[in-house]
Image (cartoon, rainbow, N blue to C red; front, side, top):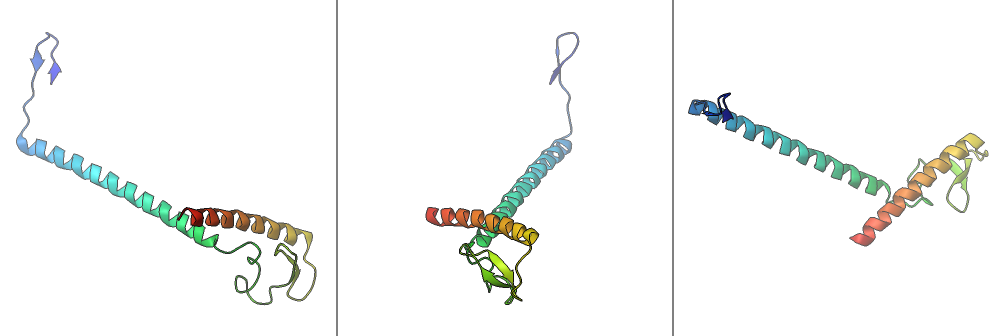
Length: 120
C-alpha cells in the first residue's frame, strides 16, 4: 500500500496466481540460501577435521618413516629435524631453513590437535 499525492491510500489489486508465484520464488531463494550456508559450514568443518588429522603426527616424528619415504633422511637432531640426507650428506642451509619452517608448522598443528583432544 502506498500513498497517493492527495493523501489517500492507493491499493493495487494483484491476481492471486501472481502473489502465489512471488511467495514461492521467495521461499525458493531462502531455501537455496540456507542450503549454500549449510554447505559452507560443512566444507569448513571438513577443512578443520583435515587440519586436525594432519596435526596428529608429532613434530619429532614428522620427518621419519613412515611419514616420509624410507631413505629420504639419514640423521636427525634431538628435535626430530633432519641433519643429513639419505646418502649421509649434510643438508644445505636452504634445505635446513625449509625443513625448520615445515617443522614449526607441524608443531603448531600438533599443539592444536592436542588441545582439541583435551576438549573431547
